[in-house]
Image (cartoon, rainbow, N blue to C red):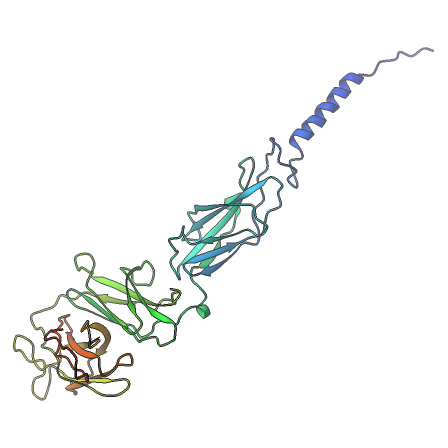
Length: 365
């Protein structure tokens, strides 16, 4: 018995198989590991792993593990001042065996002791970038670790008058300290401050005459030491002052100044008894005290350029004299004092005292 034989569609099957092979070759597998860098690559690189960040002097060093995609071109580094963003692109880095980036804000320097947040993405030859929204941010504080930085300033004091702020602190006596940087801001914390001046190590004080009550009534100050490499310390505790309005009772100057011959000279003075208008500061057996503090100034005997070196709170109505120990100077320096009252009035400078016999003492410092 004969059976009808149906010929196979060999040509059509071959064409279908060839088409499948071509599609697989062009597009590859759409799951699993990224295969190659062809023109038809639809996969973005993986998210960079093992990201770390370390504070440096006015900078942050960011490190991460190298990605292994064969078509990788490089990485994009994003920074924010908040963990939730927004993040701004700050650098594009090419492929490296051990990728890293030192963020110093394009040589401008970051703000020491401020926290910064970073995200890193990878991108390939097709311009595809790893998913930044799925990337965890890494946090770092700019500045060297405390053990690698100069000692911080302590015991900061400040007084405000109508037209100036007086800031003083304990001298840092560690070797290699070059001076102090003074920062000022309008907030109640150390954040958002800006540098306003620097003073040498043996001058632990600053008079800020660049303030204005029309701009703000309250100011915050922090102080940082810096060494020979200009590496800064951590912030001092912030101190806030309020500008005063003053009144008509401006105190007269302290009088009867003297200085001892000690290695750390002691400056002594008598408190003023009256204001410039003739009204009493001290009156009879029950003194009415309006004095808040004393501003101590020192100068070299050869230049008579006076700098603020200390602020001393008044020691109370039971005492008519007061002293200040200067661990920074010598008996041959020139010393003078001003009084600050509770309304922000500041007296004229006192007469000058010194143990130097040949000092050229100005009539009015």
